[in-house]
Every structure is written in C-alpha cells, then in structure tokens.
Length: 551
Image (cartoon, rainbow, N blue to C red):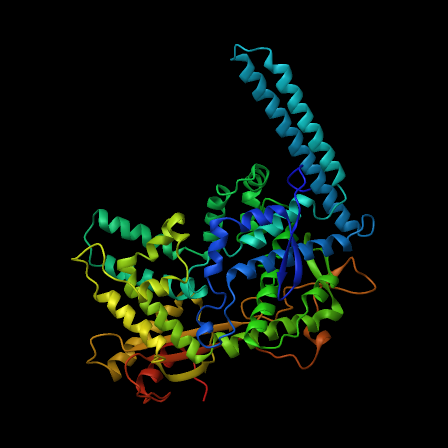
C-alpha cells in the first residue's frame, strides 16, 4: 500500500453523482480532520442556493468527488501505457528513473558522511555500525522500490499524492465560495487603500499596509496550502502524517501549479493537469462540479467524464508529457464547455443571484470592522472557523461584551440580510452584454467609475452609495480562447503521437467567440429604472473604455 506497510481497509462512500466510491485510508484520515470537515459548511454555489433551492450541496462532497475522479483518471492513464509501445514516452520515463537513482545515491552518501561526523563527535562509538546498517537497509529498500517502478507511468505514491491534492484543493475557500475571493477581498483592499491615504506614518499604517499587501496577493488556492499545513498536525495516524509531510510541497504544487512547469518538483508534467489544469483548463475539478451542479440545479449535462477517461492517454508533445485525447472526442470537449456555459447563463449569471451576491458582500463589508472577517485570512486557525455561518452570525449578532461598542455598521449589515430574507432585493435597473472583455485586475476600477457617474447623475443627494455595478466575465477554455487550442489529439492509427487540431478539421459550425462580458447595474434603495444606454453616464463610460452595450 502506498505510503505505509500496515493494512488499513478502504472505506466506501455513497455519492449521488459517482455511486459507491472507494477511498484510500489516508484520504479518510484527512476527511476526519477539522480543516476538511469545515467544508461541510461552505456551499458549492454560494448565493445560487437563494434562487435554486436544490443547490444546497457543499464543498465537502465536491472535494470527495474530485479525489475519486483523480484516482479514476490515474488508473486509466496507467492502463493506457505499455512499456515498449511508445519510444518517446519510454525515453522520458527512463531519464526520470536515472535522475531519481542519482538523487537517491547522492542523498545516501550525504547521510553516511553526516553519520560519521556525528559519531566522531560522540562518545558512543558502538552506535556507528548499527546506524550504518540501518541506513544501508533503507537505501536498499528504496533502490528496490525505484527499480520496481521503472516502467510505471504513475507510481502508487504519485497517484496517492494526486488524490490528496484533489481532496484538499478547496480547503482554502471562504464563505459563499467565490464571492469571498472575487468580490469581498478586492473591496476590502479598496477600502484599506482609501484608509491608508489619511493615516500618518506609524505602527497602525504599517499594519494596514501589511494586511493590504497580503490580501492583494491572496488566493483560495494558496490558502488551501496553508490549511493543508495545519491539517497535518491533526492527523493521529503516524504513517499517514509522515507521508503527507514528506510530499506536502508536491501536493501544494498539484493544488496550485503556477509558475514555470519546468521548475516543478515532479518532472512528470502531466500530473499537474489532473487537479488544476493550467494548460487548457480541462481537469477533474471541473468535471465533478459540472456534473454535481447540473444534478442539483436540474440542468442537463451532456459531458461524460468516464468516456473522457477511457480516451485519455499521456503522449510526449513539444518535449513535455501531456494528457492527450482521441481526435474523435473533440466534440465531447466542446460539450464540457457547453455545460459550463449553461450553468453560468442559467444560474451563476442570474440577475437575482447577482443581486444577492452584492447584498451579502455589502453586509460582510459592514460587519468586517466588528467581526474582523478579513483579518481571519491572515490567521489559519481563525480562518478554519470562517464558513457560511457568518451569515447567521451577522443576522443574530448581539452586543454582549462591550457596552461602548459601535454597532451601527452591524445593524446596517443586519438590515441588508433581513432584506434578503424578505426578498426585498436590490433592483436590477440595467442589464446588458459588453462587446469588450475587461481584465480581472482593472474590472473593479471600471465598476467603481460607473458607480460614481451614476451616483452623480441620479442620486447626488444620497448620503450612501446608491448604485452597485457588476461586470461579469465568462470564458470558455483558457482566457476566452477556443477550448481545443491548447489541447493535443492522437488518432486511432497513431496513438503515440498527438497534435493540435485545426478548427476546419473539427467543424465549419464552430463559434468564433468563446467569451463574453455581462454588465449588471443595481439600485440599492430605489425601484426607479430610468437608466438607459443613451444616458450621459453610460455613454461617457463606454467612450472612455471603448466598449459598446448590446441593444
């Protein structure tokens, strides 16, 4: 068994999407930690649940599903590989094997030198032969293990690491999932930037600058790595804890494979395409949440991940090992992204969902000073207690400890949440598609600019912000490009060589655009809908950013 010698039974989980699935004992140990159990209390689809009552599923079951699919894909990739069939792949694996043998020998030699140095400075000279024998035995076992895995595409340890990465990939999500990192955190940074302008140099300013810089670069994937570090200490099984601790850097890379792929710890580059695929965006994370979201939303999905796995294989392309697909399955890849488009169009981009998103974020921002929600991001222990329960915490917050505490903002936050409960939502006064895709980094700048223009025109006397603008980007594939642009395909006649497919080889009916940008404008306290594309704020804003509104 990978990562241990003692037998431990696998556990069976009954999942509505994948049926009865087996989980490795180490995965079960992870599931039984507070860091993972926290995911029971974070809904997969955030505010969508307020519109689609069936969307009550959580990050907990999604993560288990992703771990299962990762294991299935690993098995299928191993099944497709046969030593002696693909000379390029054999050559790559042989190079990796030789490099690992060299590293193991170098490590052993260093350990022997360190042992001799320790014994030279110790009074107990009798321990040297015993310790040396122990090192030699360990080295021999490691060599035997490497030799046994010489012609294996994905070793047992690598496969288990991939499953652990899949299981832990969402540990860092905050309340209401993507609302937290896409909406709440950027607005906290914006608020901190404004506060810093009026603060003189000193300790308080340095603290706020540190917090701002941390939040600016914060991602839930990086937070997942921090939660993984904390999780290790809560595993009582010593073998499991030692295995994860040994491979934690590799597991973190699998969760968040950013940077140059050649600098990764494992030279088998295709392993980084299983959990979070930065090459073309097709990974087991999406496969599970598309299937799971469609099931709970009542939306049909035409994508079959089991079929995808059966036609997936590893080929050497441009000097790197990549997961490639059979050429006849290209239509199936488009089905995957059509499913994604359906989910976003019918649920995630729903105007009512967008309104509730905006209201919850407004409430979180108002409650932040009292409950220090954003500060929890800086402390993994506090972050572990941050879940969707924050909604009820704000709604039912009462002054208990400090009689002088200013509760004005908390009361405003409560009023917003009470409006959600009574369906007195922000009014969507304008909806349109934009003909330009605005980058994520400057998206908030564009939103704020339009909010200020609308405020000046329609609500100049209001003391508080009356308008909320949401610019939502939806892209298929990688950065709005054709989904198959960064994918390689092999043929029935030659399954060892994979190449790009030209659009003309696929179909003449393919769309030319794979991304769109949607504009939502909400009024917070008024039901007036007197905004039009021809109004001066809208017209001036469009001219400034060189974009057009759809009619």
